[in-house]
Length: 419
Image 1 (cartoon, rainbow, N blue to C red):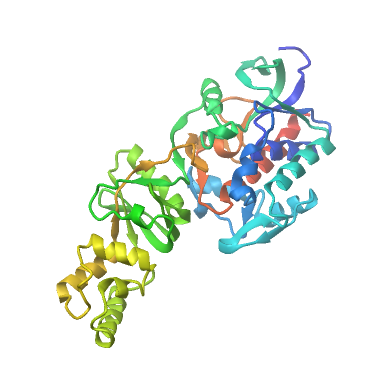
Image 2 (image 1 turned 135 degrees about the vertical axis):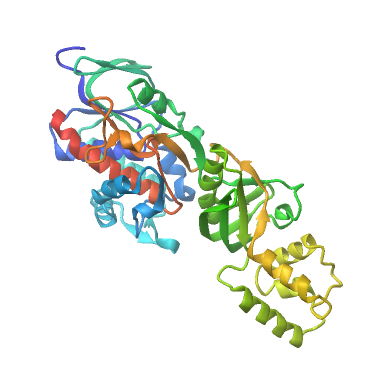
């Protein structure tokens, strides 16, 4: 390695975590020579497609309980470095004001993800950070007290490296998992990965499955994910029935738990409470009251007081309750079996739509191999890791972006020692 490296810090990946790390590092130490490398010709593609093209920047309330993967104590320590009010202030400083929407999501007032990306890139330029698009990194090696980097545009030497390469989700945006290989070759362990925040595929041939019949219908549910007989996750929120299975916030949040359990051989299953928040006794009392008032009403009509009419009709058919079955003719045992089924309706998940539809990757570089005070590698001096490449994934609602900003702040502040 040359006595004087080309740059002090080379950041691999110009996504949310990489861009923010460069900004925080340069703000903390203006003399630091920072270069951001990205293989894409137009960096930041994942920012642009996030939140339906509006970019859900963060959430009004973020805690370690909103994340899965690495130890909560480590996640909590990292999040503390850049809490939500500081994140809001940071974006205000670079010209992006935020507003709150349902479930605490914070979006730019302009409703444009492009404005978030442009503001980050503009701040890089203002600070004098070099952003090199179209520079795909092929290899990284430790040399003396620094690193040698082979890129598609030639070699580069640096005193420190930041891996901000993301995971495997949304490969069309440039996520190819190369960062995992770089980290492994520098001594790190990769926790096996799965898609997360991804729509789930349902077996249409399994008993009582009606998703295709009600495709496009959304309803509130309470989902229960089990591994064998053990409940491993409970998720509330809207569920969207689709022609291939299920999507929507509840399904996306449940997906990582089902897929991790499958990866670990846990025989996962998924059930939905289609009348969330209702106790069995309350439902039965309402049913009996309706029976007294409208004894000739159909079962589907009664169910439609609890859920969308199309779902009620499909569910009654799936339970083999014909259109001629009325409230007055249904037996006590049939009524109770139906109400119990509503509270735990089986959804025969067979898998997911994969990384191409996943918003984030579960798994990644083991969090215990990172110093949470600096985001520095415990395996390779001079190496830092931020964002999605780590074994941390948040639920839907801006949490994964907050993880990117917080890890970037920790690493950015620590990189000042290389100036």
